[in-house]
Every structure is written in structure tokens, then in C-alpha cells.
Amino acid sequence: MTDEPISPLHPQPIHLGQTSALPASPDEAVLDYVPNPRTGSLYTVRFAAPEFTSLCPVTGQPDFAHIVIDYAPGETIVESKSLKLFLGSFRNHCGFHEDVTVGIGQRLADEMKPQWLRIGGYWYPRGGIPIDVFWQTGAPPVGLWVPDQGVAPYRGRG
Image (cartoon, rainbow, N blue to C red; front, side, top):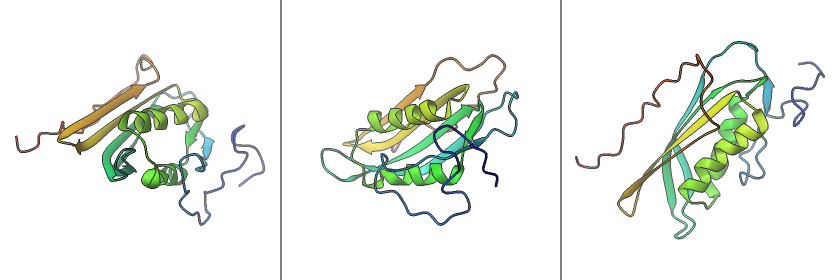
């Protein structure tokens, strides 16, 4: 590893190659970014978190979701261990499905500055109603292959 800064937010990754504890909250979580090894190429990166957990702000009970994040990198890519720790930090965080899903997408977009990003939060039923939340930074770049997120709609017993 060199001493050259990786991003203006974090000069060197703090999680890469280190033992790291789960952050107590999303606000305490530090996302690390590394240089895009294919700057100038248009490609899609996908992260799937099929066992995402946060807490209901009303009951304090756990809420579960399958989160899918797709993005077209700009100058940096998010380091996967730091993303895993960031997503895990929601286990003790109370938030409505909409706020949690959109907040994850906005934080990644604000810090990483990808060419394009979308997030799908496929939440398991609460009170008998599944809630799916989608957010993206805008239209995908022309020529970007954007596959279906591959999460089937909740069908219950149907």
C-alpha cells in the first residue's frame, strides 16, 4: 500500500487488511473507497445483502430485507469489507424502510460519486404488507448493461 491518498474522504482504507469491529451505528460506520481499476470503462458492480436487518422505529422489533445495490463506478469503488460493516451497523438502527433504503443509496452516491447508482430494498412483510423501496441517482449512462435485480416480488402463499 502506498501513502498516496485514495479519496478526499479517507486517505487510506481503514478496514482493508485490518481487524474491524462492527460499528455501533450507520453514522459511526466509515466507508472506504479505493481507486477504480478500470477508470474509463463502463461497467456495473452489484452488491447483494440478502439478510439485511434493521429495527422498526415503532416496535423496536427487527425488520429484514434483501438489499441490492448496482452502480457504475467513477474514479473510485467502495471497498466491500467496509460496505459489509456499514450494512451490518443497521442491526441496531431504528428506521422506516424508506429512510433506510434511500439513506444507504444516498450516502454511497454522495461519497463515492459513481457514474450511476440504484438500490432496491425488498423488505419482508411487516403487518402483512411487504414494502419494496427503490432509488437511483438518475437515468443509467447510455450503453450500461443494467440487469434485472433478480428479486422476485413477495407472493406469500400465492
